[in-house]
Length: 194
Image (tube, rainbow, N blue to C red; front, side):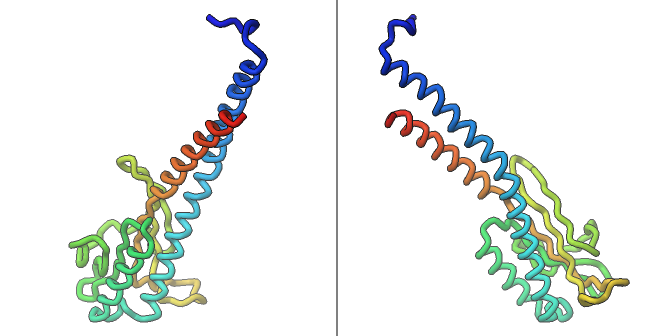
């Protein structure tokens, strides 16, 4: 065992620097990730809400839900959104079937989902968001109603559909991992340079 009294001053300084710099880097990195992760998760939620609202507004203004022959336009829009937003895992557009008054999936980026009857719809009078963790996958489930009653109608809403989106937070996890790696490298380089 080495006694501290027999170690030269330069070695003592290096040991003190290592014992201060490395834990400080890790502590700062840990605190920063704990503070920024919820902020970034909320940002992903806002991206999902804005995307769903934009799609709902486009469907409403173009009247794509009112005429079944225009459902291909919704499908095209859904595919474009999925291509442009890699964090969005799933988009479903649900509309009312005029034949039997049931709710059906009009468009989805998931193969084979179009035409499926939907029975367990969330509250359709307002935007709903739920943060879920399933099988180590963390994501936001967002539902935005397609409201045809107009912006000034307060008493009764005329809901003609729903945009359902799942937004992954995997990008945030990747950023956190990269930040940890950068901190380890920075702590190592700082210690070596000193």
